[in-house]
Amino acid sequence: MTNPALRARYMSTSVTTASPGQLLVMLYDRVVIDLTRAEEALLTGDRTAGSAQLLHAQDIIVELRSTLNVDVWEGGPGLAQLYDFLLRELIRANVRADAGVAASCRALVEPLRDAWRQAHALVQADAAVAAPAQVG
Image 1 (tube, rainbow, N blue to C red):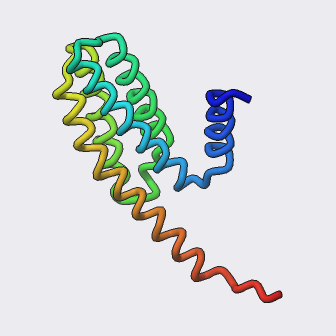
Image 2 (image 1 turned 45 degrees about the vertical axis):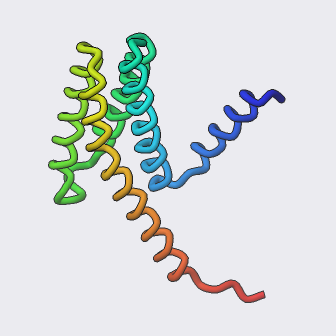
């Protein structure tokens, strides 16, 4: 199997076996990667590559927004508004080929990603403490 095929298989397995918390962090990681790549591409004048990255980031934000249950958490409506704002800004960055707007979006997403990563780690740690020890 070639390296790209192995990588694709690894990524597919990672996604299909990930917990909901892991998936959320993976999506945020990918948005940050997309925005970093978009910014770099737009700064070098590669509008096609920048647009592709921005479109992928938009797809992820749309997915995050559509799966957000605003009734479960008091911060849900605010997060929904933030996703809506990010989507508008990503569209604006794409239409204008504006690396600065992409960078601003990344600056908003990175702390969210870090917060979700930390929350996931805390949940995992709590689950490990709560799990009964296996006695052989």
